[in-house]
Amino acid sequence: MTGFMVALLLLVVASAVILRWRRPAWYWVSFGVTFAALRVLVRYASVMEACGLTVPPSRWRLSLARMTNRPVPEPRAPRIMRLRPTRTGLVLRLKLRPGQDAFDVSAAADRLRHSFGMYGVTSRELRSSVVELRMTGYDVLQRVKMPATTDSRPMRIPVALREDGAVHYRDYRAVPHGLTLGATESGKSVYQRNLVAGLAAQNVALVGIDCKQGVELFPLARRFSALADNPDTALELLDALVSHMETVYELIRAEQRISVGVPDAEIAADIWDLREDLRPVPVVVLVDEVAELALYASKDEEKRRDRIITDLVRLAQLGRAAGIYLEICGQRFGSELGKGITMLRAQLTGRTAHRVNDESSANMAFGDIAPDAVLAAIQIPTETPGIAVTGDSSGGWARIRAPHTSLREAVNICNRHADRTPDLPELAPFRPVVGPLPSAHVPLSKAATATA
Image (cartoon, rainbow, N blue to C red; front, side):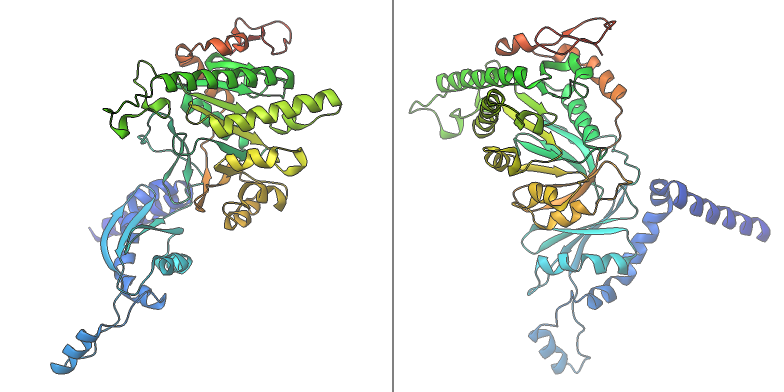
């Protein structure tokens, strides 16, 4: 019996070692979460004191100890409100003591990571005096596995996994316009495919501008209401979008319901305040390489370029209420692209930067909203494509990685939801004509044939 128990113990240890090496997620669920929770609870008081996260005993406790001739009370650490295991780590909710600040906990996050033996620790303040520590037990970005269920809503889709194990959502109603930067082979195209795949199942019109002869967006044409693969067609398409936006504003104005008897909360100010039967379908505009729209080599091309940038700026400034959202991608997005670029970039609140070639490219993404994220963006290694840094105007940022989605998988998803593709009258001339596989290359234009 003793020999059997020893053999069983050795088998369990060997299984744990192999799982930790080959399947860290399985190891965490089966063994790691229990060990980590015990480690946190046993070491908690000493770790908090070593990290300077304790406060001295209050005066009344000192006075009570002197009056009762008891030992001097020890410093007090933040009180544990809840310790919750997750599929990637632990969530520790703390109640701060008087005199403590959430910044103190955030500044000690790296020391807490070492002390508790976790892979990563991030801190955020939930409300006054309540802080949440999200601790990850392994590198969740090494092999991205999205959870089976996510909190998807209209115009809110899961696109990546954060380094703390949480799902990163692209919420167009909260952050209407976004900018995605990244060098060649940095994972920018995979991130864009995840966006399209997530939006394909929703009631939304997709509009694409891909000046690389349509190689990125052309295969997904069955789910697109409009596509353009060259600057000339892109200008006409953007003009049509501006006209569509003006038509939507006329509808909102006609249905505003601003009579005296209507409560303020029911006055229509954007398409989401309209009745569902009147609400126009929202539009997401994906620009694959913005530099191709801004470059020019002649006077005529310069005039076209100025009109394109003007239309994009107008859509960025006014499109949110009309349900028009911009998703602009590129390798660089600096002032060298000409006038109006800086104005356009200022309207793109959501910023995502994959691996970039230089520090100035990272500054273009985060220099004006989250300077701390610049260093994180330039430190993304070459051998880990898909890892990116995301931030917004609030100053917060996080490392994320989108699950790998092949072009074939994205095509299949778009084909499956092709019946959801809405017909917009203003964009009808730019609707790709989907037909059989052509025998020769057919350039994408107003009457091009798209296959998927």
